[in-house]
Image (cartoon, rainbow, N blue to C red; front, side, top):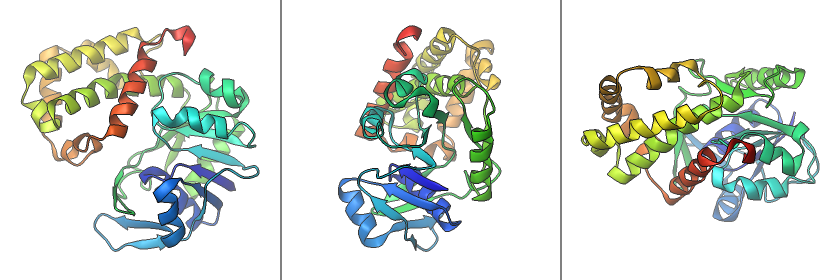
Length: 289
């Protein structure tokens, strides 16, 4: 497979390196200082405190030619710029990031038939130019990366992409309700991220019961505004269970090591910008998405 990975942060670097290592023709698109570092030293990875290894993925600054598949792993607020650069580039485009606006604004720019939706099931951090990651994510069977057609069909191209990822050791699955999945995720993540950032971290938020209840109220409002049922269905618990029980569960999570070692504990200007864009998408009338 000839593959373009658009975005050389933690997720893009991991994805590009893994696909390169199993023999695919991979180009990793980067800009600025990240581009310079990758050209000098390649993709540098370290698994859970292990030694750093270098993967010589081809690095480019602009898309060139056509591809069998283009995977976009950028922040929500960076998508508009990506779309413009892909107008004349051939290939299906799999958007792997937070997105609550539906497929329409993506297809309106690059062509609706090219759009695929998904969400990456991996995590890690940038330590200088080194990507430090946990293998217990998309390279194991514990968490599957959902991908799907905007209309919910399980098409031959989705089956082909899922199988290609799996043979590369990236656990993936076809999700027939990918748009609803992404909207549900945003409905939960936006209030959570904004509340954590306002409190100064997950542990501080957990110590403020009123803020947790306010966050939960906003989650419920977002889910109630959706035109389709939440996906996965487990998120209906946020609408059905007593507020006191849910607040207790969320406070326990916020104090857990999982929250402490997640992106919640490392707020940044990019995170803030992404949450603001997602919030705008959630507020937009359905017809304008």
